[in-house]
Image (cartoon, rainbow, N blue to C red):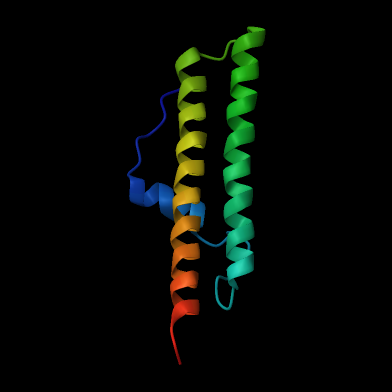
Amino acid sequence: MPLPITSITSAATTILSPAAGSAGQGAGFQELFENAVKRVETMKQAADQSVERVLSGEGEELHTAVLATERASMAFDLFMQVRNKVTSAYQEIMRMQI
């Protein structure tokens, strides 16, 4: 089953957007962060399961497993870059003199 190619913007939106169950209004940073961590972890688990199916010979195609692994890796890298930017912004705000 071929997977659709999505843009980086849509991947970032998928990882960092509020969960479908939450209204998104008044959602705090902590909730946004927790949802992003859960989504990245879900992608990692899906990639791990795909690799397990390839290794056990359950009919999973190799390229599908590789794509799932790369998707999880890129999601984690994107998440870390966003975390680094947020940390940098916080540190810059804390250095401001009032």
